[in-house]
Length: 545
Image (cartoon, rainbow, N blue to C red; front, side, top):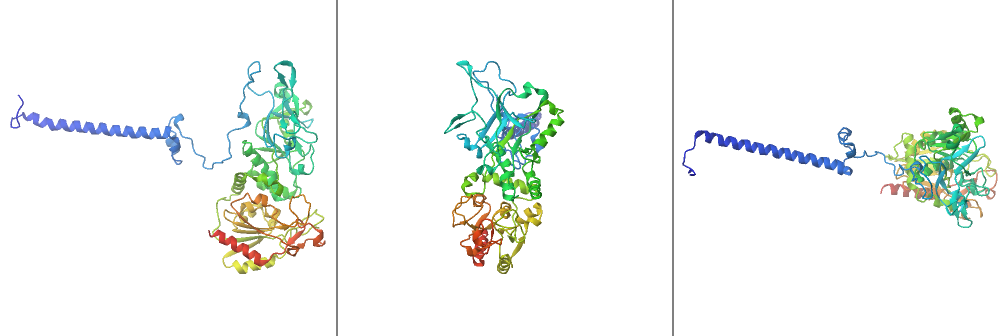
């Protein structure tokens, strides 16, 4: 019988009931808390392992190291390079042919090549870039060898076919890297005027296995990425040497997805130029392209052969796992403007690497105005009969220009004239990167323009074309922006052009009258202050927006 509310219960029961209730409540609370913590822990683990893209970039490394290796999110690159590629010719696909008898060799037995550019014309060597894998150089013979094998006709084992190099739209299938008087790729730009085996490159095809398999005792294999290249700019023009000659190696590595900071660039067939200005430019800019300075191919290989203890009497052969060749294209001439299309990220990347190499922040911008003017008054140019050691493309009324700018803008802008040749490259880069407005004649002295800060303006002086049929492909009688095909691909700098409309804007730089000299090469410019002022005003107005 159930007791009623008034029914007396033992005293012990009255004391035990609330105690049991408290224990049960505490137990439920503890279990709930443990479950909640386990849920949160599982959720965090799931986010870190299955959702690694959501892990913040500042996650402590010590915390990440506690996760199992398969669950660790990848560490983000603080300075990502959009053109850095993990792919290389050494990791390309290799599969045995269905016609092959036996297994695929573990290591390649023959050479291989891949290219970009024109694969449909034997004349495409001017723009072609290639990576040759396992191509060899016979040192004593000064001969490049592409080791191939004849392709067997499966229907007739006694018939062989030479391997294809390309398919020419006119001449059909080609089976050689040598076509008449030129090779497969151009080494430098003189191929626009003459073509021979000195300014082009192509290996001879030999039907044999790689010498490392047939004569290993006298074979040396070099594994880092190497390249064959050549300088041609004998006038030591900074534009050609930097943005075409040296930069070609940087562009080609990225375009072929074989980027490395330790490229070994081998100058061939001539030795590296040792001219004073060439060395100045090379020492200042090349380290941004590769940590390994460029070398003379013959001297470099002689050293490598000696270090490997191979005797010259053994007819040593040097093979390259990967050899980069070609890609040296014109950047400044108007008919070749298309060479720069789509290369803007490459230009920007190289600019950043050069500035960083010289301890300059590429993204830093000035806080006050600085007008920088090129002074070529004392710059002599030798070796040009139309110039006779003249000023060559100078601002003829420079003093008038400086006085005008100081009167008009000197109250709030620093105004500097500079003779570039009197400064180190580091000093030049510091100065150009501090300018908000750069006024310059065309040509080599304008080639530091890319190092202006983001948002700056350059006023570049044109020239008036007075040669009807010229090498530059420019129209007669028009004001020509000499390097515009290149400047048009540097969006971080606003370009304004001071146009030359008549002979009244020019003075001859030599004893010859104006009518007898090239207006591209042998003149200086008389600037109109009203026109200059209009351009400067526009430049400063643009910077406010």
